[in-house]
Length: 166
Image 1 (cartoon, one colour):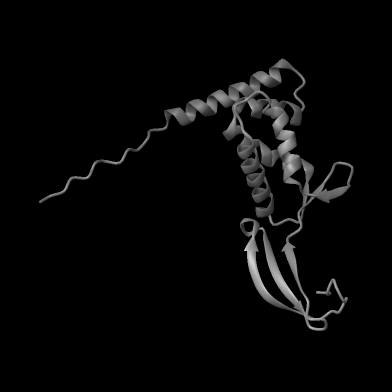
Image 2: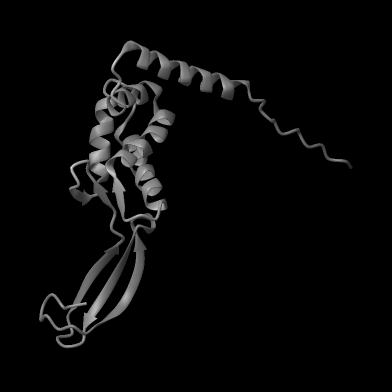
């Protein structure tokens, strides 16, 4: 690592810490030539490849901006959107790929958004999947209803109260 003060190439690590919920490593370094200290942050790159072929760094804020439009007028707050963006980034990083097609980012948004708010999900899906007709909306709503009924029909297991034998 090159010293930002004297440009010497020899520095030693004094301290390392995990930051950003494990997404980065912060290192405190000391230059072997001038003795000054500086901090570096190491992160794994995650790039989004657009349809045009252009590549840009993944941005949680872009996810939030896109989803916020779908959530307009819905009972969804900024904290929930930040958590959704984190979940999307975590899912994309879990693929192990450094470059992700933009289409996969949209797909990664759909699941968490559906759990957060079904109306916002339907709005986002209609734009993302380019719904062309009323039938597209009806088919998606029917799918949401069918899956909602399936989870409602699943039996819930309730813990039995424990009795003590004395």
